[in-house]
Image (cartoon, rainbow, N blue to C red):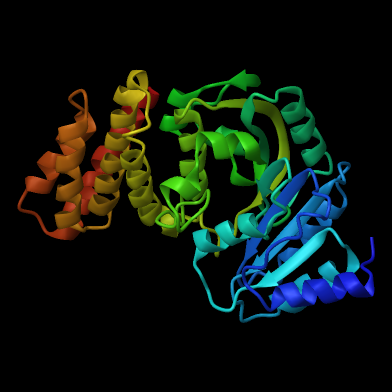
Length: 361
């Protein structure tokens, strides 16, 4: 679908303004696909082309460039010039990961039915939108329709995303909040949000006037926080047990092991933020989930030889844990030994591997 000269001029005007008002007289696409980008020019073509190949065609794509210093602008503009459904915006300055997500949402047509994120380094199966939208249309009381995905290392398929997790819901409509507290079984690019229901359940502009659906404190975990907010407030979900998205593993991805400690810190904040909206019957599992994250932080700090930090989180995890935990007891004992940091780390590693072997046996 090629743009007319007038449409191209409108897009050019919008690009000079970081927060343009969308023309509500223009008919809305059913699905707003949002793609916040920063220095991902090499990844964009595969992501956008996967959208162009969708069986479902009633979508718009919002590309919000967070003041990239590579040739992201040229790559994204070329796609926007070729297809009127693609809208490119460039931020005048970098507004952060969540700030850019929220600008994407603000730039989407206000009357689109659904919202889904497509990180520029990932891509979609050709039937992804068709299957997600069909399920969402069939179940209008569902706020979040989600699917599985494949984890990819280049062109190598590493297996299904949900295989990473112990707890995954059965296919179909569900409210598996306890499972979601334990682990994030919903890939960001596989979550289709019913915008009307989401605004009703989670009126973010009333609660947090300076941000939208994505909490600016949570660059690594804003999607997980959003899923938990929606389900904690009574929202229903629908799970399609099919891998319909592709999630790329690479050195700049937020999910890399180097980001594990900051991610866990943010997951701690997620469970703290849920305290006031968590239903009473789930408060115990929320507290246990919080304790589990604190324990993992303490173990990682112990492994890194950062004893002072390890002790802080050991104490917090032990205080919140509803039962006495052997791993916390062992870690506390090791942290109290007058040993050189390297020897203490090695002793903790030995204890951890021994415990894991015993659990497997």
